[in-house]
Amino acid sequence: MRWHIGCCMPTHGRSKGSGKVELFVMLVLFIVLLGPMLFVSGIVVMVKGSGSRGGLLTLLGATTMGLVYWAYSAISHMNFSKGRVLRLKGRARVARRALGDGWADGATPRLEGLTPWQRTVLGEAWMYSAGMEHASVPAFAKLSLKLSALGAPSELLEACHLAALDEVRHARRCFALARAYSGLPWSAGTIPELGQERPSRPSPGEGDDWSRLVRGSLLDGCLGEGLAASVAAEASRRASDPVVRETLAVIAEDEERHAELAWDVIAFCLERGGGKAKQALRQALDALETQRTPTLPSIPGVDEAFLASNGVLPQAELGRLMEECIQRTRERASECVEPLAPLQRARVMMPPCSSSPNSSSIASTGKT
Ligand SMILES: [Fe+2]
Ligand SMILES: [Fe+2]
Image: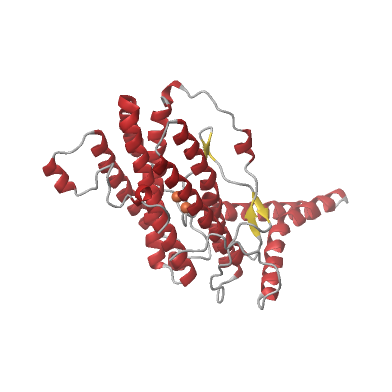
C-alpha cells in the first residue's frame, strides 16, 4: 500500500463540485473578514460622531477576531501525525503557509454530510500535520549532514534519505487532505530560519556532536516518531473514510521505520562515540520522563466520536499511547546503556537496541 512518489497533481480545472467549493471558500472568507470589517466600521462610525454605536461595533469586531484566532489556534494543536521535528537553534520550525500548487497529491476524502465548520476543523488539523511532515524533510537532510560529518556507514545515510522521501509523500498527502477539507489551495511556503542558520557553538551542557546526536535521536526519533507511528496506526483503525484510513496506515508504517532508524543511529553513536555517547544516552533517558502528552483543545461543534471517525484520537487515548511509548523507549534505551542478563532479557521481551529484527531501515535497499 503505497502512494506514488511523483503524484503531485495540481488541482486546476473545474470539477463537478467546484461550485460548492467556491461557496464554501466565500463563507470561510466572510467569517475571517467579518471581525476586521466590524472593527474598522466601528472606528469610522466613532470618528463621524456616534461614539456609543461605533464603540459597540469596534467591540464586536475585536471579539469576532479574537474568537476566530482562538478557534484556529485551538484546532491547529490537534495531532493527526507528525514526522521528525525540524529544530533550528533549539526551536521547532515549520514552513509559512502559502497558497498555490506543488505540495499536494490528488487524494480526496469524502466531503458529503460535513458542515462548513467541520470541514474547517478537519482542514486546519490536516494543515498542522502537513506543516510538521513538510518540516521533517529538511530535518532528515540535517541528520544526513550530521551523519556524514561523523563518518557514518552508507546504510545509515541511505535510510536517512529514504526517510526524507517518505516525509515528502506524507506532506503531499496531508496538504491534499487539508486542501480538500478547507476548499483552499494550501501549499508550503518558506522556512526563512533555515536559510539564516549558521553553525553555532553548542553550550557546554549540550556536549559534543555524538552526545547531541544521541539525545536528538532518542527524543525526536525513537520516542517522537515511535509515538507518531502508534498514534497514526490507532487513528487509522478508527477512521471511517477509506482515504484517511489508508493515509494514516501508510504513515504509521513509515514512521515506525523512521523510529528504527533512530535506534540504529544511537547504536552507531554508542559504537563510535565512546563513553560520552553513553553518558548522553543516560541523560536523555532522564529527559524522557519530562515529555508530556500534547493537550487537545475542546472544540465546539465537534465531539470525540466525530474526530475519531476522522482520524483524530481522543485525549485519553493519546495519553495512553504516550505512556506506552515512553515505557518502551525507556526499556530499550536502558538496555543499550546496561545490557540485561539473558533471563531478564527473556522477561522484558524487547528487541535489543542495535539488532532489532524489525530494523529494516538499514537492511532494505528501498521502501517496501
Ligand atoms: Fe512523517
Ligand atoms: Fe518520520
